[in-house]
Length: 411
Image (cartoon, rainbow, N blue to C red; front, side, top):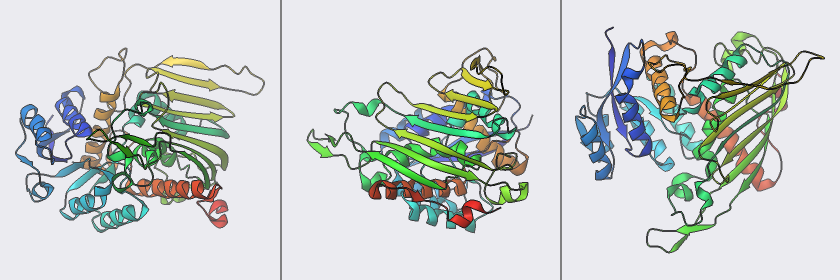
């Protein structure tokens, strides 16, 4: 099979930039792909980061500390940009203006205003594919729940719970970093860094909340700086958001216009339920745990990366038993791989699947080989609305409305 080659540049060669390089090196792991990424340019202000790429990626043609060199290079078709939140607005707009496709990092702008500027640039260049990174929904268990949502298996939804939990910040001696400073991370704190992962599937399903009541916590107030002296931690450690979701009945055309993905029919029948979102950097014992739980009158399902092979479901008929059952999924991914179905799926596999989805959409647009695509700019705008309202809710210690009454009940 002749494969279309997409030449990528990477801006920000830290943890996630190296993960992308590893995914590109493992592309032969995927079966039946007619597109392949090739990393030809890298940019980072730290020469040591550039050195890792030039030593390990033999396709590099441009290695620079000035990202404009990547944007002006005719060798590069698309950019993966992983930089601190305060740089998103300028970098993303410059990338788009240069005519490069973009996969950016969350939260897609340090705040709602920055996000709005980025979306204006996106709309001015509709020929470019612009998406946001979020890999956890590509775990097999998450993909199964997405399938259940498309199939409307749940009946009346009773409650949705979703979260993303870290634990390393429980250590008060962990050195401070840019995510602890409002100037670089933004006021969202943990919500800006992790919230997009939590919201990806709910937003794709059309479960945009009517309102939110947020409880935000600052737990470790200072940490050691580079010189060993204590520096203030300005951003939120933990966030719990209680949301009310009302999805009125609508036809397929209106569903698409409102941002619900094609094939997602959860909004055909009216649904009204609470949605609890948990976003925490300090969750004792948790190491990068992503989870989703959907409870319904006919069917319920839950998945957590804490138990990456296990999907729990409960089918219910009136008067019948209420019994959860567990299923080991193995490696059943959105894009077929050489890995046997009996083996376990992990984080590196989810990264590979996310990149496969991005390249698939870039190459085939509306004819992707499977239906789940990366986060859209419009979904990042929805996320910013929720997180901005969460900040206001915490300040006022009250529920903040996200939709007007007419929007809530519009048919």
